[in-house]
Length: 359
Ligand SMILES: Cc1ncc(COP(=O)(O)O)c(C=O)c1O
Image (cartoon, rainbow, N blue to C red; front, side):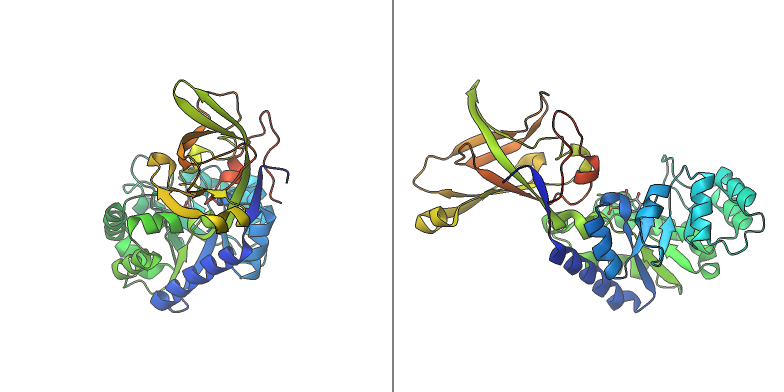
């Protein structure tokens, strides 16, 4: 087995999408559109599966416009859209969320009458580079006459911040709700692991949106990224070296922060792959908490000595450390790391080793 590699779990993606859809149907009947946040995972296996489910797509560049299916509903976001991107979006009837007055001028230069162009505007959060500020919003709405408004909750916000932001955003856009067809909520829906850790469900989020915006009669758009894909990929990695140094036992794997980037903000779960034979003789399931690195669970032979290992990657960087793991590890053992579907492949580096592949 040539490691490391990523494994796609198609049935999980189908299940996550269907769950999202079902929760939306319960609250909005047919008046909603799911647009997968493409940047979270652009693997053709992901896009093809979602295409077949008739998902919409949220795209942010010409590359993503080209990667996603023309026939599916699409929205274009981003603070740096070029003439070429705007032209391509207009040609393909993509709903464009205008991010600035400068961008609106660009749109007018490529399409002076705005005919046949679907335009929305983004309300930006305070102190972020995105969208229009609350003080610019009225002018932007009157000038652009959009058919949609986009909001975006910060990814991984606490639930009470999510509730508070929604209420503030509602206050601001209330006067315009009767004039628009689409209300887009962006992302901010935690992945399944995080929902479990928080003791929350997707329904809690969708219900909050429904209750806050119960007087909106148009189409609700959602742009989930990590909620749909985080747990749909796993990483298979091998233990290359066990070494003792300075009272620390290191298990050095063939995958490190080159694949499991901290920038993904995901909790990774490390499962040692135990051979069936060993497991049936004398094994015991144990799980332990792993600080910021996430939860780990271990299966080991109870007769063997167990200890705490520092899991590290193979890179020649001192910070290539993945977390602690308690159990028994030998050189040549394999780990299957869960929850690597959001951003890991796209953010993985080609450094010392090749970029990770999906097998
Ligand atoms: C505009 C927009 N939509 C959707 C998403 C996806 O959000 P999440 O990672 O919470 O799924 C993001 C992520 O940053 C985003 O910027």
